[in-house]
Image (cartoon, rainbow, N blue to C red; front, side, top):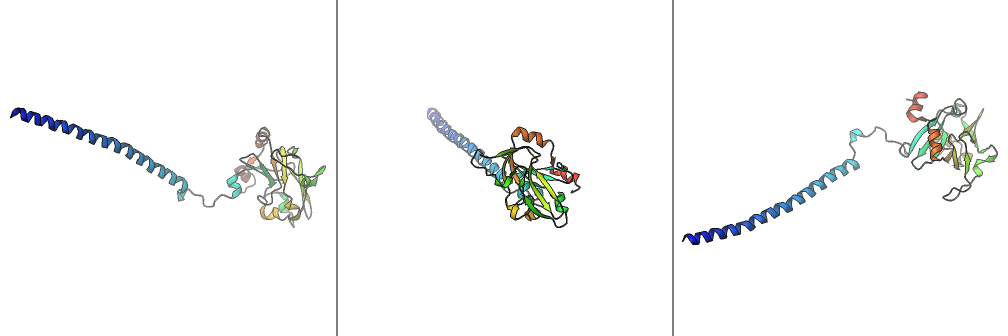
Length: 220
């Protein structure tokens, strides 16, 4: 009788061991799945933070296309008092040059009446740059004249502000000088210039940031 009970208890133990192993295997399988699910939930939360920012942190006024795509710099009193110009630099290195809103030309009675690219020894509007290598691009110094902006009573020379290759001038200004009044920092830009990295670092040190320019001209 005792021998039978011993054999029976041994059989129960033998059958119990696989059951314990099965439970352990299930727990081992559940833990990785739970970890993967937790990681997925965390990634979803992080993605949601990027796609749906906190309303409290959003600016009251959204940034303009210029503010979003360009770093803004200014050359106040460039070569002459009151000749304030801007230089908007894109991440690809291109620099857009134009008249700052504080330029003297905007203060003249009647405003700007004409834009003439025929300055120096050539007509800047006649230069055509082609291809990826920017064939025919002319290399100018920072003080090289780009055009002459005329008002009823005066005229102002607009200059490159940065040393580099002149890629394009805004020919629309010849027929539509009023673009300088309506959108001088967009459709009313003067020219696009590509400086070398080393030349840009040199000229950058002489330019003012947007905040510095605002303080200088009391625009804050």
